[in-house]
Amino acid sequence: MKNNFFFKLAIFTLILNCSFPTKESEILSSNQVLPFFTLGIGKDSLKSIGKKRWFFGVKSILLHHTYGLKAGEYLDKSKSSGWMVHFIVLENGSVYGVEEPSKILYKAAPGMDETTIHVSWEGNNDSILKNEVQLKSLVNLIETLSKKHSIPLNNYDITSKKGIFTHTQSKKKFGRFLDTGECGSEKVLSSVLLKLQGKFFSETEWKDRFDSGWVIRKEKFTDPSGKKIVPTYNRGRGTTSAPIIELNSVEKTSDGKAPEEKRLRYNQRGSISPDCIVLHFTAIPDYQKTLEVLEKRNLSATFLADQDGKVYQLLDSILDAAAAAAGTNSNCFQVEIVGKDTEMLLANQEQTKAVVRLVKELSEKYKIPLNNERIESLRGVYSHTQAKKKWGGSIYLDGKDFDPGEPYMKEVLEQAGGTYYPEENWFDRQSENWILLFTDFQP
Image (cartoon, rainbow, N blue to C red; front, side, top):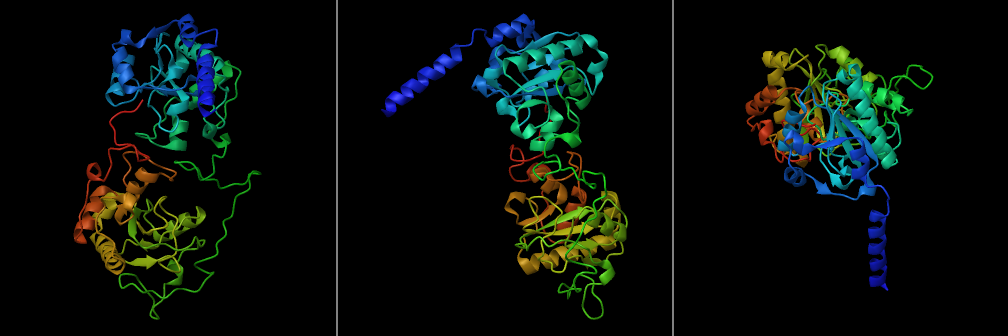
């Protein structure tokens, strides 16, 4: 009986694959799609970086652009980095691609690759909008693909992976990117959907955009009526009693408590397992303004190091969970350092010495390793940037962003008697198990 069932299933699958009267390659050839090999990309090369997939699994189209590169160079860079797109629309309106895009999976946007057809256009930013011939070819291609695969003509719900989206939207939802620069262009997608009588949704209208399940978060400060949201707090300044300070490296009043005016208003989020330390800079060169921003955004840190070299405990207990770096909040002490950038921190030796004293004291008290090699272990001393590159969860994330700066991390770890690892030596950094990939190019 079981063998008979699998035999019938195999026959059904075979029939399903052959039952459509019009082949995908015939549809695409009718739209004059030229083969990639005429651009110097051979079939063997394409097969080596792609893999087979079920054609009925395609549910979406993802738009990219070439960042101003010519098609040949763009495809060659993509191939050399292990990426590829299914189609590319040139500035002269010519369309190049593969014969049966639904049956081959190319990596270009991890998180979407298994169900999407990747379409790129030659140019940069919104340049295609000034090129009627190129734009018309792009619209025709998307119309053909969307009809063939019953793909909805909207960009509302990327979580469902059904629709037409830009690579930018995919980056914000799923991560796994080189940088957060716009790719595919929301303006271009809006124009395409308008011409196809579809529906374009702006970022604030994307489904669940303000929920936590996005790699790049978006914060909301007003309710649906437009009224300002006033945060409430159940811990901290003016609500609970000032705690007794137990660490020697942290400032205290004459009776051993946290100075009231230096405390943070925050919400209880449970307790941490004290296994690691994450360092941040505030990007604001002022202690009080930093408190205001943290409270407005309902964020928190365990400690705040001021410019005068004094470190303050912000929370009622250093074991209260802070909200500062996704992926680390349940295990790490979060240390904010007042300063607008890395250069300001490096120039302030008094402040740096105070941060080093704090790091050493926490390390000795809780047996925290003084190195930044393996952030996935949550056992060490890390930069906020390292955490963001691993887990995302920030409103801002870029490959060139360093918070509080790797030169500063090196300074602190080495002064504390630890070992600093540059990014290329972080454990498993070359893999795809990071939100921000360590690669030279991505389509």
